[in-house]
Length: 111
Image 1 (cartoon, rainbow, N blue to C red):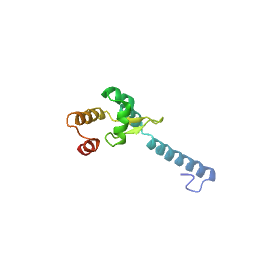
Image 2: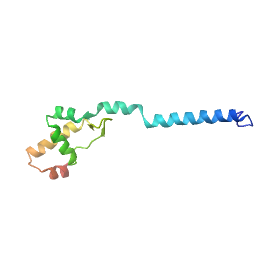
Image 3: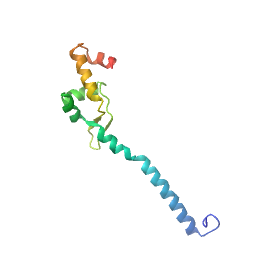
Image 4: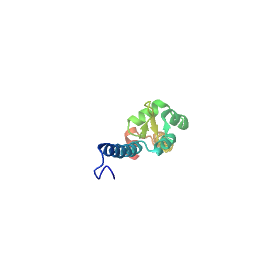
């Protein structure tokens, strides 16, 4: 109040620093939500997805490149991250290949 009602320049400067500091804290908190770390923990790296499905990493990368498996994100070191629901999708892709004899293009259209 003192800074707004004709107080000294120091009072005004300290008020500005306080307001900017609060705004910056809010902004930085919004950039790194606390739930993001928890979400990343639920996602699977490509190697984990390969182990859980019995497919090779090479196959999963190929299917990802062909648009059959969406990537949810990447780790800071660049590993692809997949949602756990992709375990079922990998099984479905393999089933469509083996039982229905569909091509990658046909599978992409079917999914």
